[in-house]
Length: 368
Image (cartoon, rainbow, N blue to C red; front, side):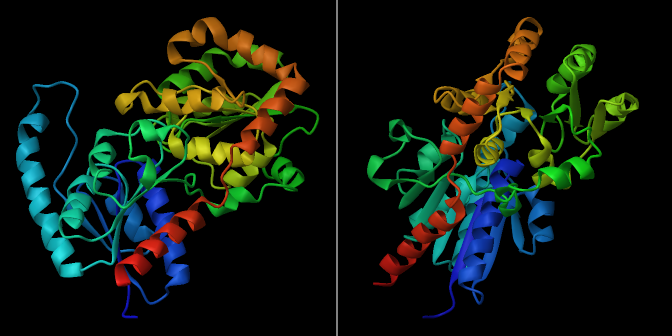
């Protein structure tokens, strides 16, 4: 067999980039001599994150349609699309991939469209319970569609769907037995319950505002906070660490220990976060971001809440409901145990490996 070549495209957010990198890493384990190329959108975070993971990346001049219809970006969109289709065609013709893998984001549209047009097998990895418009369009020609939720045959051809789950960071799979190390690492009082607050790497303004407003309430509840503010908000909130029960962090470098220490987790509901939290299996209150396309996060959270595996409080309901919801959860050990156990039941821990198994099937079918 001649040397295999793979193009991966996914970007805009970590939720699209990290699954693509995880898939590439697994392919590299199986095919150490293979060539890899990533394709992203110029100026987006993949242009930095992918090279730091050790892979080459090409950038397309592409962005999404803005909600405000009359905008400079929307006027430029047709030109960006044509430019990206032309460059994607050049990339595919020059690199000659065996398989092209798309994990979502602006750049994957033109790239997978051109690969499909050339008859190169494509695989889509859809992280969300409600797919974006790009993947809906690409699904018509894709050979395989790897999903993380049930019920996506409403949007995709049923015969192409494989439920694999979302790739997650491998270090998260091993938190058992790390509780003592975690309590020591964060210097926590062993007699108190620990609440882990997650807003994503940049941070979540509304969650940070909520935590600040509720600090006195949380102190009365007797909990300790590991509060990941995100780098955009750290300077604004770091002074709260003066309280003995509060730790603020811009980043959490040891997520495995943060998860191991947590008794309750408060989090956004991005697809990658939801997949990680299912593996972790701790009682979780989701506060979905209402500011993402097609309200993905609310739909992701609802899919978990529907299995009695988590609680959701919408941003608009926080002021009225948060204290009641939190008090009921922190005081009810049976509910904590039930939510955590149900969450673990939803985990798909072999997602990356299962997706790469599907890629291998495409290679074999194409070589026949």
